[in-house]
Length: 268
Ligand SMILES: Nc1ncnc2c1ncn2[C@@H]1O[C@H](COP(=O)(O)OP(=O)(O)OP(=O)(O)O)[C@@H](O)[C@H]1O
Image 1 (tube, rainbow, N blue to C red):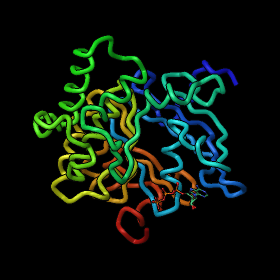
Image 2: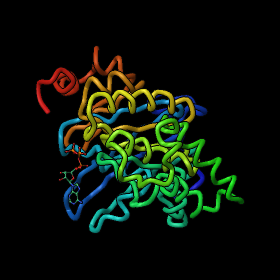
Image 3: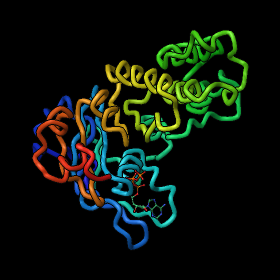
């Protein structure tokens, strides 16, 4: 595979500069079971793309392709091409640890490390050597917590345990931890499903702000959430990408009957 070769088939008509991720002919198997079946999709920068579809259709599996998290699952085998800024991330010489700093991930259950708030956010910058002094590290931590909308709530308790925060605060702490290593892409796998409506609203507001600077992909089961926070939506069914397009069109005027049935709550 030529790992620098851009894909230029014009799929979905996304202009080159806006196109952050190009997924082409990706298939994922767990043993002999096909979970993602020959999916091609282009994803824009500075944009929120929602991945929707019934349980088990492959949304999380697809998301994990983008930072090669599937590599860590025994028996999981991914084929096809995934390019970020025209660089093939499936190439064997790509270091998954470096890739995962570029492509941050936030999971369903907030998972701060059993460390202080400060050390949770400082963890990545320390590992990747992003700060040359203590004050630079402090700046990164403060800036990341500010961007995640958490600074005001934790600035007087930076040395308390991250795990002692509320669920919504923990999720924003995890987002601050991801931001601290300067990612370009943030993957979110049902980031609000363990949160109450107020914490959910805060995370949704934050996602909307973050999209100015990041390419965001979010898996959600909530149609109203997808409609509120995403600009593009991709609908998956049984491992296949059925339809993708502007969220408004997917929700109001989808091309496929299966999409219509799903977004109007007929199944799923
Ligand atoms: N580690 C694994 N080993 C074997 N099969 C798996 C594994 N993870 C997922 N699968 C299977 O792959 C298919 C897609 O699963 P995936 O979790 O990606 O779907 P999903 O759309 O995210 O589901 P949900 O909405 O319920 O979270 C399912 O049939 C699932 O059982």
